[in-house]
Length: 250
Ligand SMILES: C[S@@+](CC[C@H](N)C(=O)[O-])C[C@H]1O[C@@H](n2cnc3c(N)ncnc32)[C@H](O)[C@@H]1O
Image (cartoon, rainbow, N blue to C red; front, side):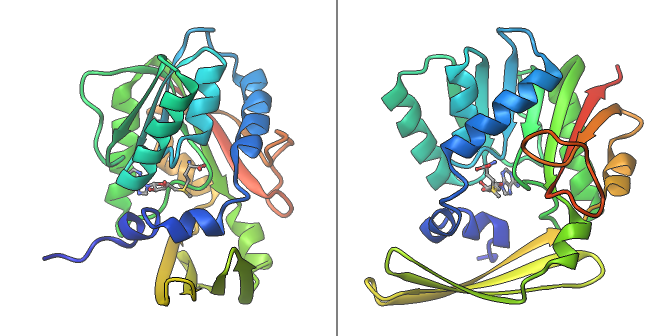
C-alpha cells in the first residue's frame, strides 16, 4: 500500500484542528467582510472555497447569501463541515471531498477562494500548475481568484525554531526550519489521555509573489495584493500574509 502524502494525513487528523483552533469562524468572518469590500461580487455569486477545511469561510459566505461549494481532500473535515451546514440549515452550501489538483466536473464559479495557506504542499511545480489550470477551468470568464498565502520573507525572518504548546491535555512540541525552497514544521503530539504519541511534518513551499506571478500569468491578471486580513497593503518585509486577487483574462 502506498504511503499517504503528508497533507492527506496531517490535515485529516484531529490534532491538526486542535493545534490551529484559534483559526476560527470569527477570524474567517472578519477577513471575508474586509475582502468582499475589495472584490465586490454579485449578490448571488457562485463561490468555490478550495481546500475549505471544516468550512469556516464557506459557511460564513453562505450565511451572507452566496451560493457556495467547499472542497477539501480531508474526509473528516468535510464530514464536520456538512454537520455544521446541516445545523445551520444552509441550502446554498455544499461540500465535497476533492483533490485540488483536478477540476470539479460540471461546475463553474464567479470566484474561487484558496485561503489560509492552502497552496504549495506538493512535490513538483507541475502539481502547482495543475491546481492553477483546474481553477482556471472552473472559473467563469472574468472570474476572480483569491489566494491567501503566507509571506515567505517574514516567515523566514521570524522563524521560531522551537516551541511547546499545551492545550486541552495535549502537548505539541514544534520544531521549525527551512531550506531554499520549503518551510518545515515537525509537530510531535503527546496525547496522555489516549496514551498516544505521533509525529507529523508540514512542508510548505516558500513561494513569493514573483512565483505566483509566474504561475498565474498569462491566464490571470493580478489585480491587487494585500498583506493582512484587514486588507492593508502588502509589504514584503512586514506583512503577515500575501493575499493575491487575480482575474481570469478570458
Ligand atoms: C491550512 S488548511 C486551511 C483550511 C481552510 N482553508 C481554513 O482556512 O480553515 C489547508 C487545507 O488544505 C487541504 N488540502 C491539502 N491538500 C489538498 C488537496 N490536494 N486538495 C484539496 N485540499 C487539500 C487540507 O485538507 C486542509 O484542510
